[in-house]
Image 1 (cartoon, rainbow over the protein chains, first blue to last red):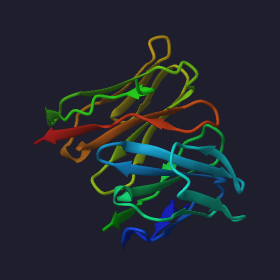
Image 2 (image 1 turned 90 degrees about the vertical axis):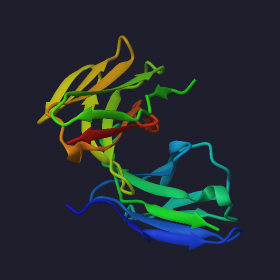
Image 3 (image 1 turned 135 degrees about the horizontal axis):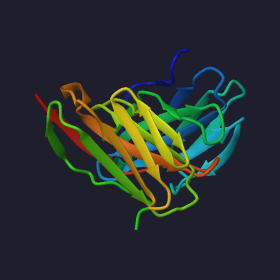
Image 4 (image 1 turned 45 degrees about the vertical axis):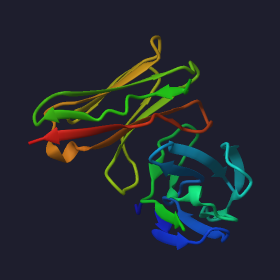
Length: 112
Length: 110
């Protein structure tokens, strides 16, 4: 099976812009979770989608949003980018509750 | 206090040594426990997955979960330079979010 894929792999944006990141889970996986990873804060949970519904949400401002499509692919959007949004954004998929989560390679976002 | 505590290291050991990595946690409801390995500028790679208490072995890796002490460990035998990476523990309760430790940076010296 192909692993979790994320596009694009690298992005450079300017403060105030918005960005959309994409994630394709492992075939058959219905749960997709998003994380932000920074050197200072480590891995922080953003949100999880399961069968097109947001099931869990982390403590991030409303500028961070996401959605999941009927084929389980997911997108996350960050509006009004801030310098502090520079991070590695990781997507992970799982095929069952409490099951193993497999990560993609991440999208490295740099905000200037 | 964080839900999951993990010593960030760095930890440096000679090749061939046994490595012990640990995490403690405060939420007794956690049921699923995982260890990930992350190389620089890559996504985390799932190494071990265990449910509830007990031991699990996979090649040179052994994961232990002690729910009574709220303590999990990962042991790496016959460590290799290619094991040099950041190791992250993670755990969750049912369908709740996965909670990660800070990660331990490990270096294996040839």
